[in-house]
Length: 352
Ligand code: NAD
Ligand code: DAU
Image 1: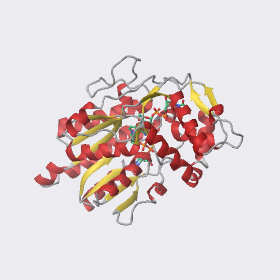
Image 2: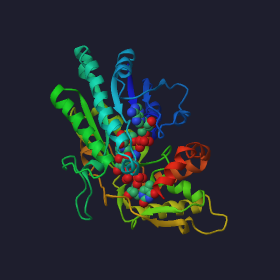
Image 3: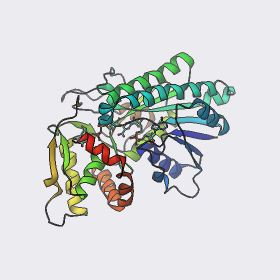
Image 4: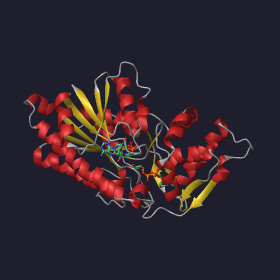
């Protein structure tokens, strides 16, 4: 028996696989297309006992996925693979439709065909866990209550619309075919192996490189930050004990305005790796043109997963940011490797 992880060379997927082998020995088959965001080096530090098999391939390849499901006696699929960056979805939505919607559909079809061949006990035990986002619920006004699992879907970006579509497909496969699915919707993650196109790693990278720290619009947009390994623990918990067909919101109970996040990062870097001229990294903060259609506020009501499954985050923002800044300072070679070539083109396009 094994689990199939899609997108396991990306940020959360690779953290999930590391977290998995820190907690058990069950084999993992990791299917990843290695887009710009996928990096097999993210898994270099797996322990020697880790039964990890990397497969370079696409979730939309039905033949390959069908073969993996059968050959490795897969008992659960944890579906991370996606195009994940909102800004990229604004510049070029096509890939988001292909991967997040068509890719998820094809994956569901492969899984459904396999699941139908299983013996009754294996069929009952099988799980398809779909990893989604808080962005499907849209944007909150300052005094609105946090998103609960019953909020209506109001996605505002091509990225969130494509994730919303995938959530609906997963739901429909449960309702129509009885596929044993679970869906998790999570808030903004941060931590090691976060690709430096996203706010927190971009700011750390730019600060150390002496570059501007770009704040979109007025910097008062609010996100609910969660340390990535907490997210991984929540997914394991949902996989073990979640009720079939149910949705679980996951969040950090940690709403913060972007400008405050960036100031905290600057203060942490001032302490851990001070600038040669003695000035604060905060002097590099630069307000730039806002993101098109920028959602103002996200906040997750994560009481259901706490009440029903006993999960809540272990890290505070202070402890999680300290670990994250330390990781980036200690892993300059990783940052160097992922910020060459295509990355430079992206930065030039997005911030021009
Ligand atoms: P990421 O962009 O870092 O990684 C995505 C991975 O998927 C990469 O390794 C990439 O190579 C792979 N991939 C892309 N297309 C593929 C395809 N067609 N077939 C196989 N592999 C493919 O993303 P992430 O930040 O790790 O996010 C993982 C999942 O979690 C996504 O579904 C995302 O929507 C969701 N999510 C992310 C966050 C966050 O804050 N990062 C929060 C909530 C939910
Ligand atoms: O909420 C969950 C989502 O969080 C995930 O579903 C997405 O996959 C993930 O990318 C993330 O989306 P965001 O758009 O919230 O993350 P990002 O790091 O791109 O931006 C965080 C906030 O910071 C957002 O309000 C935009 C702002 N920002 C971002 C960048 C890259 C800036 O002000 N400047 C920047 O340069």
